[in-house]
Amino acid sequence: MRQFPLETHQVAPGRVVEWRLRSTAAETGGSPGGRPAARVEAAGRRASFNQDKHFTVAEESRAADDPVASWIAVTFEVAGPLDEQALAQALLAFVKRHEVLRCAFRRLAGELACEPFDPAELALDAQRVGVFATSEEVRGFLIERFTRSIDTLSWPLFTMGAVLREDSATVYLAFDHIVCDGMSMPIVVREVLTAYEALCRGEDAQLPPAPSYLDFADEQRRRYLSIDARDERLDYWKEFIARGGEFFPRFPLDLGVEPGGMYPIVNEASPLLDAGEAEVFEKTCLTVGGKAFMGVLASVAVCLRDAGGPGVYRGFMPVSERGRGMWTNSVGWFVNTMPIEFDASPGRDFAQVMGSVRSGFGEMIGHIDVPFVRAWELLAPEEFAARSWPYPVNFFSYIDMRKCEGAERHIDWRPTTHVWSARANGACSWFQRDEDGLHMNSIYVDTPQARRTMGDFQEALRLTVQEIARSGGFRRPIGLAPPRRPARTPLDVAASARRVSL
Image (cartoon, rainbow, N blue to C red; front, side, top):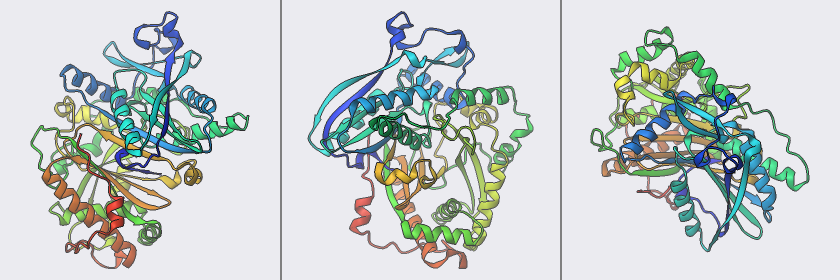
């Protein structure tokens, strides 16, 4: 399972069916617009800090006639003729199981309220969309559908459907970020397909408990809403800001952007290591006391440094808040974004850089409790009032998809994830490890300079991680001289995603 642009996904043509979520309460006296009527039991439900900021940006953008748009999507395969009724039942059960998917959001006394529908009030309506003769037509339809139907300010906050063929089907779901995160996508795949397969056998699906994200959000707000900028739990953030002079760590390379400008995006994906190389790379990292993600982060740091960045790496890193306990199977936005800093100065060998990454990561994890949005609001209030991050920000994300629940079935289900945003002012890169190797997906501004900068960076990073895997990079300094770029092979070209300008 990996993340790459939807524009490069090869979905076989077929007949498209969608299932639209509907509230029966709205038809029998519920509030207008499909929102649930006010309920006493829902009065205390409040959005998380992530959700509140996301919704606020959408509100302000709409008011300024400058709407933002983004989505997170997942697709997966069903072998054999699709049982449409069983899939519809599985999808509805999935929505009913996760309270956050049943929520409508609205302002209540200045705060963002989550108003969940009663599961018994929800129904799905099947709609026959049409027949698409080519993969290009299917992709075009999905891109248009996701972009048009996903709206932070409108319920429901996701869309569901399938491309049916005689002997298989591709199921798709796309979500607004306000109800989920990237790690929710493997949960979607596992739960829907586990329920579908059970229903086809005439059985009930056996799924583990999945507590509500709204409970997590409620607990988080109770703990952190009352803190102020003097709280000692913000000391890690304050020290990070003091050393760098800014709340947001800047992406250190030139992307050719103007201050305050927002740009169409380039959405690219490329392989970095095949399965065998990724295994050797991980063993090399373990040899020097680190993990694979630390090795990738170390490689990113030295490549940025050798392209003109500083010797001290400073960046943001999303960290899952699910933990190892009760939230493992819950859908929601369980992400805290934290700053990380470590030494990647010239002359340091792989083991030394890895030691710095390990130390920096350990320090970061020791202060993971304060929510990013709350730290942002308290320590950078002027920037918090803006609708976007103020300039290109250094951002690194890594997920080992092989460790997700249900990964043992990914070879059959063939799940893929896709992210999209209408505009950006910087660059974000996500790294995924799966059974086929290590992969990179980047979204960045569509400027001539950014295309040159990111193209050179991606190539240097590929060569660096390959060198570590092939020679045991801990034995000598890495990145001291720019590596010679080899000619790209047809396989490289085919695996790299096409540029997207929207």
